[in-house]
Length: 397
Image (cartoon, rainbow, N blue to C red; front, top):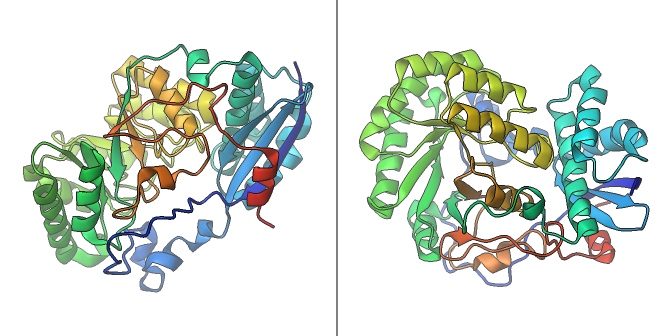
């Protein structure tokens, strides 16, 4: 069966919950950004305006018999052009089942202008659509095509990306939902000096007090620190027994992670959501600088690209916990079938206090976390239960 058509289009699939939050926002909070070095860029809206201007991107890959698969990524503006102008004309006519061949071809055809970054988002959208199509053609869930269930269920944690409700209300709701692990975000950084270190320590101490000693706690720094500030912060936070500290440095600064590891041997470090292609992961594994890889399936090269990263991790004894992996069926199926992935992250707000997780899915047919665990849909493909009419109703522009 050959690929007949590829379509890419901007889409709005933001959850539309019907339950009102049980508490009102108490502040206009935002987590730290590397742009906050500059006062005029500090704050929630302008800090991320560079990429927030583009919506999500959907990709439909259709086979000769009319069966189609749905893939996703982000940054619709430039990524749509890469798919339509560069990738699609070259892979139409290829075998729908040959996911390795198509993935390798996409990486090679984009190499001249960089297969990482924007091209990686495009490759991810096409690859996830192909795996969905492959599962539908074979009438099997994708996790079976990846080797079958490797675990009975996926252990999930909640990431408190919405700061506006405050730590107490959000974390207490996460615990009520059954999460056994939670992640919080920094809202200070090097630009705040020692006051920022004090503030972050107080924030972590408060979170530890809220969740208690039997819940794992993590901290995300979202690329905002330098090596010295990060080393000082890790030393400060040792008493709070964090499972890991995440994304401390700018993603390209791999040598910075080497120096940070030299100054800190006790705290587990996680990163990788802004690494593209398997190559940075291979380098980090060889250098021994990172304990947990966090590729995003919808950014790093889809299922095929993330599989390669998982194999690297397995060889070096590194864990993989995909960024936002439980938000969509793609990461759910991969985690269910993959030994290197012990946990799954539910992020992008999780749910405001009092709003059920069932109302916070992005795509109909997505499995929902129950009491901190998840089992993916066993429907064909990724189990995404949408029609072409539904996709049309959510298309932007």
